[in-house]
Image (cartoon, rainbow, N blue to C red; front, side):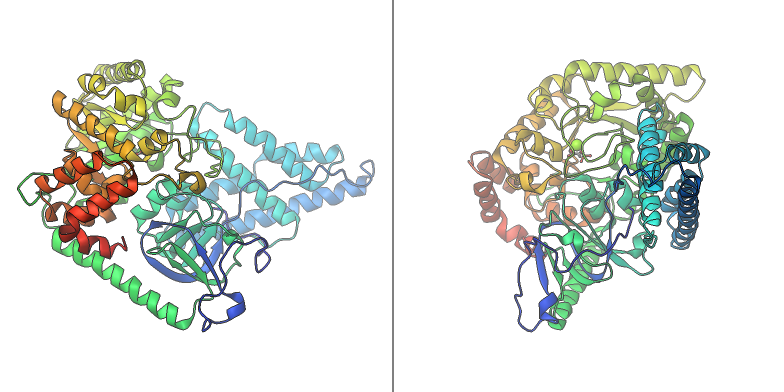
Amino acid sequence: MTLGGPPGPWPPAGSAGEGPEDPACEPASRRRVWRGVSASAGVALGPVVRLAPVGARAEARPVANPAANPVREDEVRRLTQAMDASDGALATQAQDARNAGSAALVEVLESQRMMVRDPLLLTFAMAALEEGWSAEWAVQRTVDALAERLSRAADPYLRERARDLLQVGDRLLGALDGAPPPPAIPAMPSILVGSELAPADLLAWPRARLLGLVLEHGTATDHTAIVARALGVPAVVGVEGGVHELEEGAEIMVDALRGVVVLGASPEERVEAEVRRLRHAQRLERRRDGRRASAALEMLDGARVELLANADRADAVAEAKAEGAAGIGLCRTELLEPCDDEMRLTSLYTEFVERAATFGPVTLRTFDFGADKPAPGRAASSASASPFGARGLRASLADPLALSRQLRAMVRAGAAGAGVRILFPMVTTLEEWRAAKALVRQAQDRVRDEGGPAMPVSVGVMIEVPSAALMADHFAAECDFFSVGTNDLMQYTLATSRHDVRSAQPAQPLEPALLRLLAPVHRAAHAAGIPATVCGELAADPVAVPVLLGLGYRSLSVAPPALALVREIVERVSAAQCEEVARACLGCRTAAEATACVRDGLAEALGVVWEDRGR
Ligand code: PEP
Ligand code: MG
């Protein structure tokens, strides 16, 4: 979320951006067009605010004559001035964030202020100066050492602070270099442009100052894209060609209906983009008005479908209700708050569940750290994040005490609303699953022993790893519900990456291999009599939704802004039509063939919806 940094060279060196397409554009020499992946539909026009990469490096430079006291004093003075300047800038920025109503950002900035003033940081840095090192290296060495300590802390909250400390280091190094402090939030609504951005940092941004998002890395199914869609922020990601070096303040157009970013758009293009932006907003509005009346949802032939919402922010619960969701199908608790304090978690989940109490149950998923949601203490790097290793339940089981604290908080929250369903992410084996269930039972016993309300909770398995999909019949016999995570299931089935657009390119929503896993998963759930909800992004894909319905899925969970779209699709098709199309898709050899099957089979029913989405 750190902003600013010196403006890059223009035009950016080595850019693969396209040359002028329209000779009428103004000024022609500055016109650039970049293409990427549309991660959240919409159009935005506005000034660029650059996201600075975290973790600038200083050199290990000794001062000229370390033995000479005046030299050391110079460095001490430089360091204390840099600390004062950074503290002052952070205070101003925290006030800006307060005025903009972003409590989350205020919290981050205030905690960074405390770090700048931390006596331990000063002591470590002074020791380096005593040894004759430059102020820059004193900062670098200190920040590295303290961040390393924090990243090993038992408390995830403290581990999370390591990233803040690296950002504090960047600020201090910038101040030593005489660079102006980066603005925390822009004075006016802007478009964030950068290499990458962690989902939590996007969530902390004040929505009113955020027009759009452009990132060099990322894909349409990574978590930053998911958050952008949930916030309704137009976003283009996976944009190659040095887009992150765009000048601060440059006016750009983000056409996230077409996956295009334009610098130096002509007046005609701007007008046309504005018209399309308005049309898109009106379409969304119309769709919403016409369809939010009731939570009951039926296909043309009367087959009932349950529509739930994915909500990772407390505010999103009210949006879900307004859009007619029948409950919360997925709350990614690591995005809600990655905290380890049991009392804090209890009040957080209780309040969340209370908000939904008037309209439906809440599915709370245990922490799913790893890959692009960094384990606390590690800087997010969507370019390098490995989807393998300790993630989800496997990572949680490595620290059973922490998992138990989270489970007790969830169990207590069960008394607050219309039911809590506890969901575990990235389940891979039955052994893991049984260990998770045993911890839930212990949590319930403990809450009961404390005299607390021990409401029954149902426990569910995320089916998002091929091993779980292949063993779905056995899992179905030992759990209360399935949530099908198509984002990860696609990634692991096709050996692609949700985080790196270059390797993610081949994965298409209707890959027959994915469909051949989804079909038996539904059959296994049906045979065991348990519900199966699709909560990955496929459930909001206008071409994939009828196929999911045709495979038998009758419960879908999507971000609130997508609820109206999915509702419209469900109401326009019959179960029989969808079954026919799904059968044809299962016989296809490629995603392109499967997509053509859906288009041919349902053009009459859904053509207008696809057109709206530029599909
Ligand atoms: C999924 O993998 O499809 C899913 C819903 O979980 P997440 O996107 O949080 O990984
Ligand atoms: Mg997942």
